[in-house]
Image (spheres, rainbow over the protein chains, first blue to last red):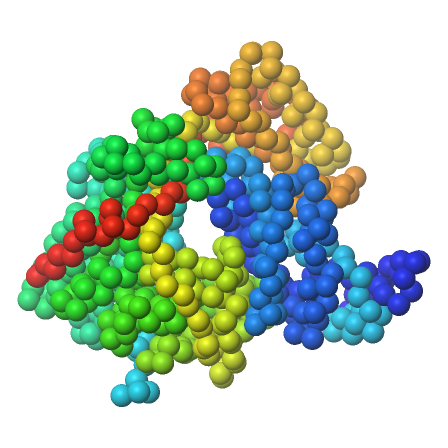
Length: 129
Length: 458
């Protein structure tokens, strides 16, 4: 089993940075020139962490230069967040020249993001992967 | 009576989906309805173009040979079919299916319904004159700006004509631009006799339709979570909704098929193409996706319940397609060593040549497949030892001439640019027409009186 060493930010010793791919799964699609990403907690116990850490502002920063504006919606019943990434598709639909003109893989692009999580959670996630 | 279930099976998730799926849905176990969704946003404009060349075309032509394969089984098993394969010419589609049914000796055993009235193209000027601006919902521009470029205009119809066709005994219902979800809502409202103003039932049927309208995408296809554990995708089971009279339903698939139906597969499909989850708008009502309750209910079974809805709006969405311009995409593959640097050098050279020729484009987009095409700058720098990189350059212009000229500038790079390049066997890139999408709203009273249901005996 391969375990990547987890980075420890100096200022906050009680947390570690974990990439979202180890905390959530996702699917994305298009709505005109916007992509949507549905982000779903792998473990329902970690959904509150996603709500707290995967904020609209942080997602907007993650995708800077790629999207114009971000909206976030909560679906606690599905342990999911839905993000609308406006202006993500270079015109969208048939106009876009992008390989991913329909925003199909913005899902995995969001999963690259790292969020701070309590050390205990980081250990648990590392053990289960 | 109360524990009766109605089984609606998905046969196609889009025009061009797996051709075997509907056959296996019909033969693989009990189903009551087969729903087949064919229409995406710009599909109607392609069909309109086909119809303008031949008045007998303008629908999803593959629907006809497909029906030829399954009609005998459908009649024998009492299965009914709902599909928007009719495109901009449901009548021609219904006629073609009727011909096939006659050839199969099904005369007197089959009734085919067609639904019309969604096509607003012949009425556009009249509607504009009457003060319906058909403003672009995304940009706020009035349709008058592009009136002369409009290729197709169709209102999204809800379930009402579908329910009426089924009431009149149709076995196969062929429509134009009926919503994807309407293809599932129609059968449920017909079977259970629900009131169209029972908004929670409308929302429940809408969610059921949303879950199965993309075919296997809710039963293990394109599933990210634990994707290695999804077995048997050689023979993917397409999803089936087993609906109950109380509005709850189970999502499942036929036994012995591959793929998986579980909480993850259903949840990933629920969030697909989602906007504001509190307000999922269809012509039939508004569904609240934050009310959906999922429960694992055995192997390949997920129970869905608790769905709440709100009343429908006074407006219908209109899908308008218009001619925008031209585009082309050229690719070349550069190999190790220094593959990425070679590809970037080629891009610089090509752009300089295009500029030197005085060609004007609305956009030139360069992507490096293997480096940044899917995740852009988030990918980080590639390995200096990257084995190969595909240079992918796209251009778009309102006029054809610069795009045409661009397509002649790709192959010359092979002998006049950076070395170790290959992968140009396809020859010159193709110049493609760009047909763009213009979403608008219209007062439903301008459309609904024009909707007609006709039932034809075979």
